[in-house]
Length: 262
Image 1: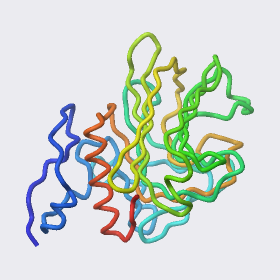
Image 2: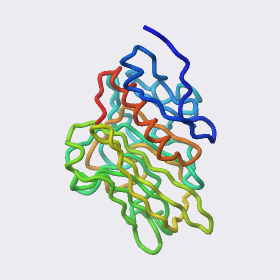
Image 3: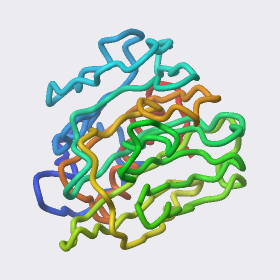
Image 4: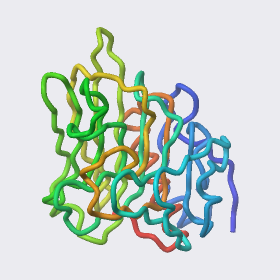
């Protein structure tokens, strides 16, 4: 086995040239296990609660609701209201959230994988604030932005792209463009190394809640348990090239643990 120092593509505020990680792995050169530029990089491969602490930064995920069930390379969060893992990444400003998640059977409403939003029926909902990323009732990857002017929906890929039971890389970036507006982009890696994204510039009401993985806040979209292998947060919006590199590295690291990311 040959080793090389490989600088991760996500470092500080720079965008570095991307590498062919599949070729590097085939050549016996080691791809980094964790992201040096992440605010939090959580890999749920320890079989217990130790995976809730980021390997490099030391940030921790706080438990909301019922404890997850741990497996060798993943955890499954309980279905039901407000079960999830809460990060310390604020809802405002520019940032990125990402996860490696397994598509569940279609939910009755939505299976939330990442979010900061309450359901509109929640007593604490007013004013409309936050957002969440989910598998919709038809199995699409969907972002919902809660706004006083009405919800905005961003659909990235349809149910045919990610089969039930398949693993996928999903990310959302938010760029603060001033004037109370943000640019939101929803990204999904797919088979064959493709990468899809959908963007929207919106007026988003920022909440004091921090980003969670799973359903830490919603009281309605609760009928499907979410299984995750990895969760990541960044203090800025990653570029297309950076996300593509992150996606390729995540796939390599997941494969070492027996997980095939589409």
